Amino acid sequence: MSRRDALILVDVQNDFCPGGALAVQNGDEVVPVLNRYIARFLDVGLPIFATRDWHPVKTSHFKAYGGLWPVHCVQGTHGAEFHPDLRLAPEITIVSAGMAPDEDGYSGFLGRDSAGTLLAVLLRDRGVDRLFVGGLATDYCVKHTVLDGIQQGFQVVLIGDGVRGVNLKPDDSEQAINEMSAAGAIVVREADTIDLRA
Image 1 (tube, helix red, strand yellow):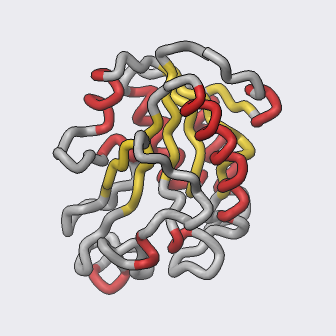
Image 2 (spheres, one colour; image 1 turned 90 degrees about the horizontal axis):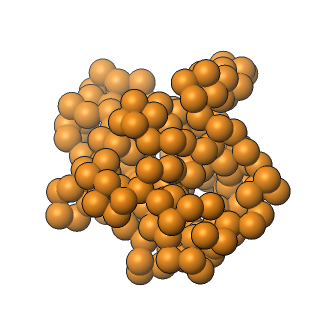
C-alpha cells in the first residue's frame, strides 16, 4: 500500500441489494469484504469515497421515461440509502451521481460531493494516484468507474471478491472484468491485499 491510495465504494445501496428495486443477486455479500477494507484504510488514514446513485423522480434513466431501468435510488428514499451494514465513518466522502434528469450516472467520476466538486478533483486534491474499487454492480457502475479512473490517469485495483453484477446476460460480469483488465486494471482478491498498512 501507498500513502497515495484511496478506496472507492461504488453504489452499495439498498435498491441494489436483495429486496431492492434493482437487486443484484447476492449484492449484499460485498458488504463484509468492503467493511474490512474500510477499517484498514481508516486505520492508516487513507481517503475513502462512497459513490451513490442519486436520481430525481423523473429521469431518462428509468423505463417510464425512455431508459433501461426500473425506478431505483430516488433521492431521499430508503432505496437510495447505503446498505445498513456498510460501516460508513464520518471521514468518508459521499459522492452522488445521476442527479440530472438526463444523466445515467454510471460512473463515479460523474459524481460530486456536497459542495459540487467532481470525484477526480477530490482525488487529486488528496494526492491520490491509485484506487481500490469495489461495490455494485460489476457490469455497470463499477466497470464505468474503473474505466474512467484509468482514463483519468489513475492506477486502478479492482477488488474482485468485493463486487457483484447485474448480469442481464449470464456472462456480463465476466466480460466486464475482462474489459477492465484489458484496460489496465489489476484484479485482486481480499487475501492478496490482507496487509494494507501504508
